[in-house]
Length: 292
Image (tube, rainbow, N blue to C red; front, side, top):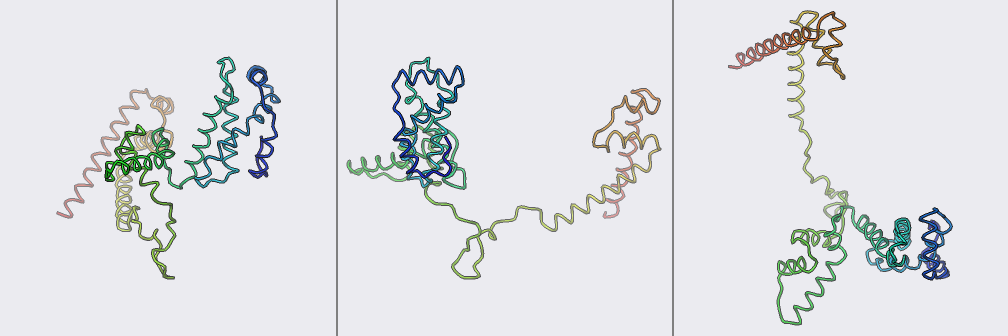
């Protein structure tokens, strides 16, 4: 059922006018969709239970999401339920659909409640939707009993009540205690106030590091070119084809081209690397002796 262009009031009115399905009709429609992929049966089943989806969506309005979006998510959950429903289990479709509708709405609320992901595990989801309610009840009970709860004791009781780790309670408390702020907001009310983003430390490479890395790369490149120039043509060709290509060639393919055995090419490659290593060591010793 497409919801674009409909207000939540319009959707509610349409849902209230939908037929009420008895158990026998519901079962027949569920079989028709599962066994024959009858889209008319699916549409009728979904339309009949849209009032259930809208009713559940209305319970999440306090989280600030647009009602029409909540209804959209609820309808998606309803359609998932219809697709996965097994009429052979002897359970009414409405009972089965409640879980899918609620899960779809909760996922949407948590994705859109904050720019920073609030949580994705089952314990974090349980905390997001139950923490304030459990906290308020525990505080009322403590007050009625004349007991003073400090912050740590309260968080520990919430963790025990909800059945989650204390660390999750502490994390969620921090996430729920404040709203999102833009890094482009100014730090003061003055016209020339600095933006918060300007106070972030730049973790990129600094100018001095870039110059040093560029110099070291150029030096290393020069050393390699010198080492390569001291090889004969065949050795230089083998090194280039084996190490300087995006897709290095195999010893066998080089042997076929050079008219050599695979083992001979391997020996020439090892000898070339030995010459280059010795040349590079000599160049590095010259540099070290210069600064000694």
